[in-house]
Length: 221
Ligand SMILES: C[S@@+](CC[C@H](N)C(=O)[O-])C[C@H]1O[C@@H](n2cnc3c(N)ncnc32)[C@H](O)[C@@H]1O
Ligand SMILES: Nc1nc2[nH]cc(C(=O)O)c2c(=O)[nH]1
Ligand code: SF4
Ligand SMILES: [Mg+2]
Image (cartoon, rainbow, N blue to C red):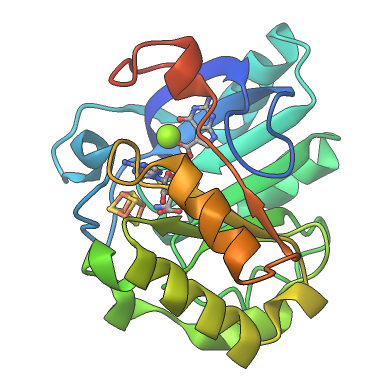
């Protein structure tokens, strides 16, 4: 039986993405191939982080107990979890609306043709994250309107790079563009001023809602 390394699972409101504000269940997988210098879940990225090994059936039973429709697979980097495709298919077959938070380094090629194609919220890691070299820019052409490209920015120069990438890869023709501040590093106001100054009509500011509702360091929310 296939099992998955789940470091935490919880029900909350989605604090980010196209479904921000809707209730959702979160399943966080262990391990990541990147080390963004702002990562708010770096605790989940180590090989020895305690986790539960759960099967698709066990996860679906837990989801049904909560009568939840939206499921977000996150991490860590969920798309690097071994045998993740069968879990995505099982969740889709069971009728859940599946969103995947992914870091932009993993090819979406094998996932975008799944029978139950999930919605991808794909980061493009900006220069100040330290991880831009890992980005797989071939992914942009695979994105569709239910997906999202997210730039988590630390600075005005990150915003400049985000805008350049959006123009170069015609991101707005594929899906929505979200701009989110690295929590505490740049004032949201600066992002708004930047959007106005550059007539950036396609972009949308997003604040991580859960960090305003609960203490920003709190896990499981
Ligand atoms: C923890 S990551 C897990 C999924 C995947 N590894 C990724 O990077 O997309 C989920 C989301 O949280 C964002 N994030 C992590 N730390 C953050 C911070 N300090 N401030 C704002 N967003 C952050 C990431 O950029 C990503 O969009
Ligand atoms: N409430 C809440 N919403 C979220 N949306 C994406 C999250 C993530 O960590 O990927 C997240 C999270 O950690 N909490
Ligand atoms: S890719 Fe995601 S989980 Fe990995 S270090 Fe970056 S923000 Fe954290
Ligand atoms: Mg989070």
